[in-house]
Length: 234
Image (cartoon, rainbow, N blue to C red):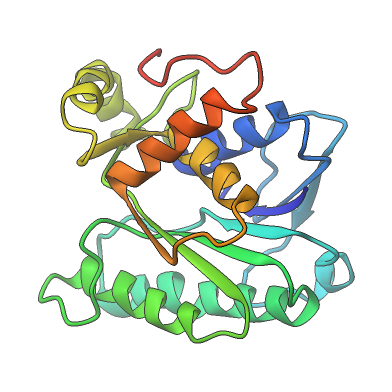
């Protein structure tokens, strides 16, 4: 599989990148972002742009791919207009460019639990708008509605305040993942679920949090890399 990955420096994207690089079926990962991922691997290339609104510097390198794993995003804080610009406008700009060059590929989007364009809660409403817009594109789209995401295997949030919070909450999240898999997942589980979805001939359009964990378990049980560890490990 040849994969375009966005958000490789973010908390979820770091975990997804790790899983992709460990998987022998993934032959190339192109990380599209504003900053280098910091990883070095023979099958990893960096596609750096100053802004997702201008993909001209990398247009000729946006194909061929089998999937785009879209993990980029913004913290749901600040003005609604700014959050919508990052969550909807920039996501759609990348998705349209990707779909035009890879019409047979799949676009897998990290959304969030309870996303709904009719929600009264701003982040859920905007995420729901992004889902609806992506679903209307002429390409197969899959939405992963994650709940809380535990960072594992050295993954750290790029935001200092969030990194400090995860240092304290991470171990508790690992316990919570075992007790309430419908509410919590891990960075590793998200990556494994994404790859498992790419192997399915007819994947679902929307994947809720408990299904993410079930897909990760199926990945481990089938052809997951030997190095894959239990998702609750730090």
